[in-house]
Image 1 (cartoon, rainbow, N blue to C red):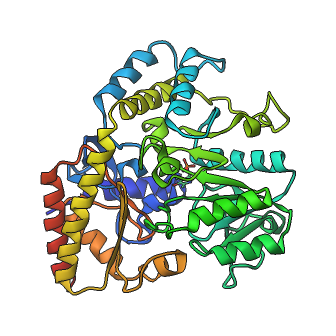
Image 2: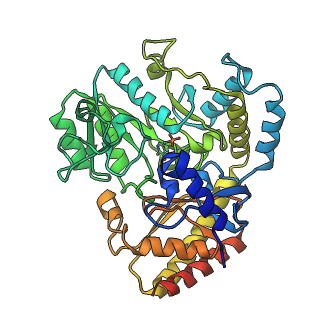
Image 3: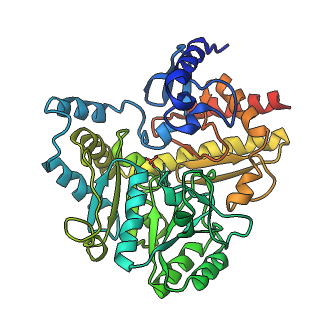
Length: 430
Ligand SMILES: *Cc1c(COP(=O)(O)O)cnc(C)c1O
């Protein structure tokens, strides 16, 4: 039986000094209840917590650990690099290496600017789009997350086509006014917003495969229609590939879906577990970025050598081994089939969405296509399942609005163990 004594002591102590005891909210287990598990170390797909419990990891640090924790090549590269100092605030050759590699891997981009997080990448991409088009507003989709910059923390009211209402205190109505929110997979809704705000919309930003309302896939034709609409209206299409990039394929969602974006943002995998983000696009657009152009964007630690070597080493390995993506997809499909079987046997209502190595189980009887349908699965079943799985050594994302991210260090034996744990968990939930 798992004990959480040390984790629970640490959480009490953490709460004295850190808001809610955590440095990012979802870690606090608020939506599933119970004590968050404090992690001590990890290797491959196995996490070890502060009480010595071991878990099979389905979060992969929310994506970066796509080839497993403490991936030897990455660790070695960091160790070697760190001897040369941890930051210079001046250009390095390594920044060219990673930029070149990214431009080689990702379609439709000429230039890439490194930042320190996905938030920064998305926030900067919106600024670039505004600077480039001379327009102020942008459209995002309900349920898509683009980081915690003010202009993204907007959720539509019940009428998705009305002006944004700030959903975090601290975001001003002025900021909210420039963010329009549409329903994912609803092209008519997007068209209506565009028509109502003719020549005012700089960009449409989207998670091509959404992962922040659980895994939700674009309907056939939806992305194509968005692309066409953007072309017709002079709007930039921004793919937020912070989750999708270097995970769905070498070239990310653009390659996976065969759709061209005007700007692309990255995070997560791109840093190999270090704090890194990036935004990229063709010369025509990226030429507005300072110091080439007038759109200011900077970072004291951007292009940090330790972060760059971690990212570079991981991306290079992914680039040289395209079979990793196939292997990941096969493992995820295997898990999908196994979970499908035990869920069907359980008699509970459920839907499974999967794309590449992203997968979500929704305890609902409706197809999950957007935020509203995803929200139907935010019920009491999810926390029960989460805790039953945790007890059996399976570490799932602690929210029904998060996708699982598989790592290629997962073995078929681990996948079988996970499916067996799911079977037992579902039994226990009855
Ligand atoms: C995680 C995430 C972000 C924010 O990245 P941070 O590094 O947490 O700032 C932005 N967009 C998407 C799609 C994400 O999944």
